[in-house]
Image 1 (cartoon, rainbow, N blue to C red):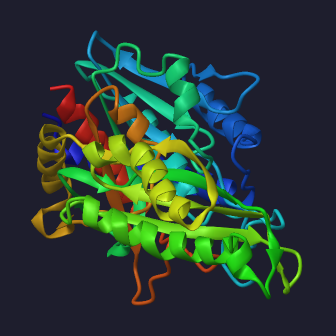
Image 2 (image 1 turned 180 degrees about the vertical axis):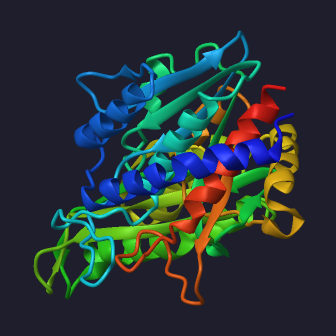
Length: 386
């Protein structure tokens, strides 16, 4: 077990660089799949410190293996920003119009770099694979491509942080089992002969049918799924018709469906298809339901979380470890956990009373979370390696 004072000393040495890198990434955000400058920045710093990252040319993103030994733990940081305009007035502000880091991936990438630089100066019994992943914000997520490239080959377990503005800076949130939900998309098409709004009884009133689907589908899902399993079905788009006195021949509807239960996630596609038909067919509409699998729930491994709790308690103290909630948001980190055990850790990043949610233009990250993240991250990977 590493001495806490040793970790703190090394973290203090790399922290100014970690902060500098986070600010550079924040000022020059790149959208999903376009993180080339971010990749080059991180790669250059790793090389300057004697590390040799594997680039994903021509795709963005990189991987750095640190240390020696047969056992290996992975640590993931993501890179991409969001298509959001950052408002004026922030001390560290995006210079790219319409793009900003509103989800903390700039912090994730910087603290992952910090973990790599500190681990490189430790004598650990094993290796740490630091994964700088692009395109987390896409559907179904950049982790999918990295897995096809063998990113987890030889890896025993994997960790990641996600900043959390509901937690105070200096604290971490831990949870056994599900910590985020799945995210799937569905597309429903309703078809009918069309007609005049004066005579709906002579045709199929598709707008009325769509209303039945919008109200009945979520209600029926609630009755068919165990109430203890978090589930949310929300329509985001409905389109049909071209005139106010014409019953359309086509209505298109789409939305998302999310659950934190892995078993429920498996049965959702067939359930949606059946229920849409049962709602719309008696009213005369022809239905087509297309279900697009997205991202499974993040299911934290209990043993990994127990190890994390011991590590965090040692470097932060008991008062800085908090239980945390299940989010109905999704994280493609789940794809790694489909292959090997691991855990997602929530990292407090709010120093004040005003807490703005992620993916908001007003999200401002407290950089004090970077030190906490590097300290806990280093202790965690070291403890998992024994």
